[in-house]
Length: 435
Ligand SMILES: Cc1cc2nc3c(=O)[nH]c(=O)nc-3n(C[C@H](O)[C@H](O)[C@H](O)COP(=O)(O)OP(=O)(O)OC[C@H]3O[C@@H](n4cnc5c(N)ncnc54)[C@H](O)[C@@H]3O)c2cc1C
Image 1 (tube, rainbow, N blue to C red):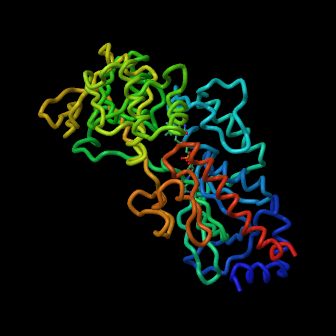
Image 2: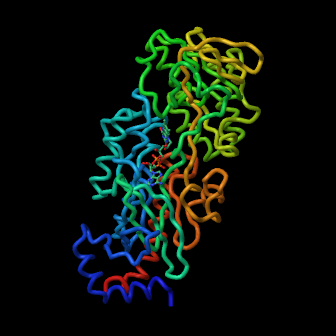
Image 3: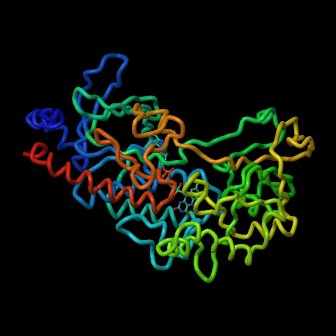
């Protein structure tokens, strides 16, 4: 017999289980005294439905899709709020990079009166309304330190650490990883960086250019965040210099009266990716000119092909390029080789002084740090090994939402599929849970 069913069957006759089960909110989980030894957590909680790790947009989306199918889940979130990336780690001027219709979560559109590119404040309001609509109440301040499948009982054991270092073990049949592609910051290892005599901030800590007025700021990294931070610095009378080490595709955010993203999606329905890339590059050339003239050389392959091969997102220009053309933002081509006090040395031997450094060097997944499983997730980058669209499902009830490198649209697709998959198993297991 399936060990989970056997376990559930026994448990449902257990008076302790029934008492605790009915006492807890929404009957979502039960609390049992731990049989643990001193090296194991003090409390052990068994969850009948899935556990979702992470209360970002992906975690909320999958919890809502499950709820709609009558499946209760719990979300464990290390931070103190939903969408902590958006609430705590983004700059003030941030708006969605893509139009709202490509960023809405399943089952609930954005309010009609929101602009085409909602601000981060509006996006957070939408997510809060979303959580309320589906009665999603994540358990905050629960950082998942490890999760491991226990073959003996056929359950996942999920360990959390609370704010006062209290340890709790949750067990569940289905584990949904929703910790995101941006869970931990990436910082470059450059000689002398820690000894730089001005402020060094990662974009996750950067809020506004107002703190850098009149300052010479070196921005390292030329993705969407690096480019936008430069624009923000200019708008606050700072003097940004951006290091563009690699080639980069810059596209206008809108072309021919449409969002570039929406137009690309539509064209891809009819034409192969290389044709669409050629079209995008032609229009971009007419609208933006030859970006290589300003130190922004394009890669050899087109923007959409590059995205699907490497995951590298093209920069959607929101005004940075015109400030580069006007000289307000300086492009510094070579990589940095060394920091020495305020002096920054570049690999071509030149050096300049700066007042501050902004690291727009991105993020990475933290899954390998806590998930004791290596078949589904790669230990190298913490992303599912199977390419899109097949990375959402692993073995033994393990799922992934939001690791498609396709933003919120990819997360919504994952969430819908996961809920459909679990629904089948949940219905099969139901008589054992409630009889
Ligand atoms: C600046 C910026 C702008 C973006 N703009 C867009 C856009 O316009 N459109 C679009 O489609 N995409 C955009 N993206 C990409 C992506 O859609 C967002 O990053 C989105 O927030 C991803 O949602 P998520 O829930 O997968 O991950 P996150 O939002 O990162 O949420 C993951 C959650 O998991 C929690 N967590 C992590 N580790 C643990 C742990 N061990 N235990 C418990 N909890 C944990 C985190 O605290 C976090 O709350 C943007 C990304 C960035 C950085």
